[in-house]
Amino acid sequence: MNSGQRFARFVTDVVVRRPALWRVFRRPLRRTFDRLAPVWDEMRMPEAFAPVEAALEALPESPSRVLDLGTGTGSVAQIVADRYPDAEVTGVDVSQKMIDVARAKPTRVRFEVADAERLPFGDGAFDLVTLGNMIPFFDELARVTATGGHVLFAFSGGAGTPIYVSPERLRAELRDRGFAEFADFSAGRGTALLARKR
Image (cartoon, rainbow, N blue to C red):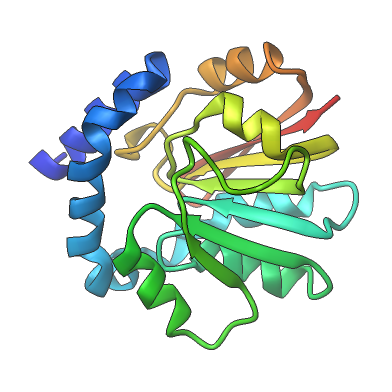
């Protein structure tokens, strides 16, 4: 990993253990992604989203309200919107420049600048929440996911992804917040985990 990737891994590890420390890292990480926004799509490998596709294939029903956290330039949100044309899809990211790139694309997805630590949505507002290479804030994630809804975590490079949380950690954190019915997926170079909120 280069220094930027190592920093992302360090921040992920720290914030997953101690979410309050996000306040320390929010600004430098946002600056990093603002700087990368113009070239972000060129950096993605074609198979980067294979784990997302594999997990979506396993969803038992079509979602109607979807939130893509850490949407970046909107790739995962667009995959969801293409697969579920009747769903209302919202993508959020802490980086204004990433959102600017996402909004410039022809899409029906709504994009907003928002911090995943404190989201501007009501309790149970979404029946599917997706996170592609994204630091999870588990309390907030559980709050906005509807009962019976699903969360989907995908890591494009598996354990080698700079922003990565192990499936064991994901399961433990999600179980504590009322999630169950876990399913693991491997596709391309990446992995995904799907869970349902009881």
